[in-house]
Amino acid sequence: MGKRIFLSSDPGIDDMAAILFALADRDIDLIGIGAVAGNVSMQTALENARFTCALAVPSCKVACYEGSSGPLLREQIYGAHKALGLFRDHLVDLESSLPAVEAGVDNAENSAALAMAQAIRDAAAMGNPITFVVTGPMTDLALAMKLAGKRACLEGIENIVAMGGAFEALGNRAPYAEMNMLSDPHAARMVCESGIALTLFPLDATWTCRLTHRDLDQIAREAGLVGQVFARLFRASDRENPELYGGPGGPVHDLLPVVWLVAPELFLTRRSRISVATGPELAGHTSRVRKKICSDTSSNEGCTLPHCIAEEVNSDGIRALFLDHLKSLAQTGRRTKSNKHQSLTNREEDLQ
Image (tube, rainbow, N blue to C red):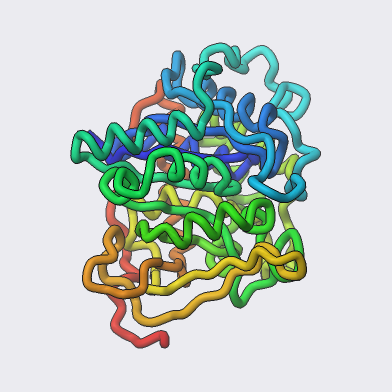
């Protein structure tokens, strides 16, 4: 059995990449997807999650749950790519080949937060903790942890792996804050202060991993219908900004946390303590105390700093692994195993 993960996301094209990768990897057991408002409205996020599952795996049975339609306390802020909307025929222009959305499974009787809380309690009871991957606002995870209770969370959650925050980099939705943190800073602060192991992938790292037109051409050419749909949607999202990113291509932020779960050697992470501002002037701003390069990618044992932050990524390795996974889905949903790549985590130089 692979690593059991519950994904909370707001698809979003890079969330789509994360879902496709998780569905394709043999070392990941995707037990549920919660759709939260962020890049798009909650209902659009839910439909996009269901569509992605149906596209990737015929008769996919991964449950997609209706998440929060807004943050805990503040007004809803949508992502810059909200206009992309639903992943539908008018964007991908492959109407005759697209799967029925009904192939995906949703569970209207259970909200995402309730389903996540139950998953935590079950994992604690079985002594088999799960990992939460959060690629949108942390609203549903914060609610789930409150519902499950501290003891169940400590026993039932192995790790929280999230895309969010910005440290040296400028924010992408405000000059001082990254979109996911800005959307619900109170939820993010609750999660960061929970005492649960957290590995964060901020803009500083994710901006360096981009897909170029050449990459998208290769994906469309070699990864079948899944690759064609993904490439067309990625182009439609118009993610390029060479002046900001320092080169061509658009970032695929939300893919990185899922890749790290199966290929941590592609990342250099550092032990830290993360703080999230909730005041009106700098809501969503993230700050950190850094200490040492992480030697253990899944545990905080023996270290007083509770978080890890990705600082460097092997972009070529991530792109190659993503293409391999998309190609495996094109072969009637066959799942693939991630091969080891050149390690960043074993380098000896001191980055302090």
